Image (tube, rainbow, N blue to C red; front, side):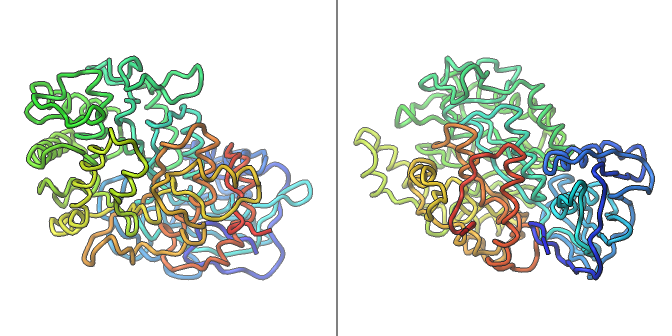
Length: 541
């Protein structure tokens, strides 16, 4: 029997024939106020299956979405972690939380999804979409009863739109993929040394490519290489309709060369140790006015409760200045009314609190190797290696310090959740096999899809005992990405496996997962992800 990804908490096949529907699916929503939800589901069914679907308010439909307590073949375990939609810690109580749903499909009465919230209805409708199959001139679903809800409250993907710019329509494709696998966070990495991708009214030169290092836009020909504020609102609204919360990241005090090139006064009184390094100086005249303006504008644009301040890899910045900057930036971020997320290095400031979230990322086995780095790069850049080595020497103490401060930890270990890692196995497509030495970060040891499936969030060695785990977030960095096809090459087929780790409380096996993955490439194609990697490990033949 087909089974979805991520695997539901409880799935019981029923006796009898499959439920069969005609060529025009009928979606029933509980009220007119939820018609937009029904339309979003109809669009998903149309794109995945070519289904024509009509939405009505009431109880008469092939797919019925009903508000109520979900019931099914077993109790739904509550989620752990931090809710990205409300910023609250999910209470450990029976019922599975806001995203929990029950699904019943049988041969006679169509399919009913029941949930206490529209978000749960959407998650159940996505499961229905994965169960649906073509059947002659119509459609069918297997007879099944499901009770389901997430293991972790925060399930995200960090997307680097700086090293490679993606248009609004391309970001929407990312959101479609996240929704298909029940992710609920899109973390947008909007600024870095190479470029600044979001318009800030108070600082208009930030998005002028003429000020960026090398003037490289890293965008398709003819594409304006940044998002207007209206573009950003469009992305946020599209994500909200699919119950994905956007968390914007404006990286500081490091990774700011593009900003400093646009506004040299941000560098402050000290010269950086290398021409490719820059940082926001906490004692510069313009620094905190800049931080207040940027975070204030982005907070006003963002309905979600979180802002991400970056805080990673401030290479060459004296420790005292780093601590001073991060402590003040955290205060400014909180003053916008948002909760603040920062990469693990922010723990060195001593200013994190239980109201913040720290994002762990330095994975076991991925520790920085300065000798290998010196062999790869010209001697003129060896000073950069020294600065990097000094910064990474402290990384093992970051997460324990955050845990000691009571700060929830968002698991993003590079060892298993960085999708810019190269593939170790061949592709079924010889041209892709040749490409795998170009697309993906060379400093990470290549691993197979199976190796990247073999972990669980609760046993990550990077997170010490006693940590409050906020959730799970994958990341894809785009230093080697030259097109949307390259993004597809790195993200798929690996992202669904991370979805299963974040959603399904029980540990699932590779063989069963691989069997469930088999029909998914057709859906990736339907959603516009054409150059997914044809892994011989994930798709042996």
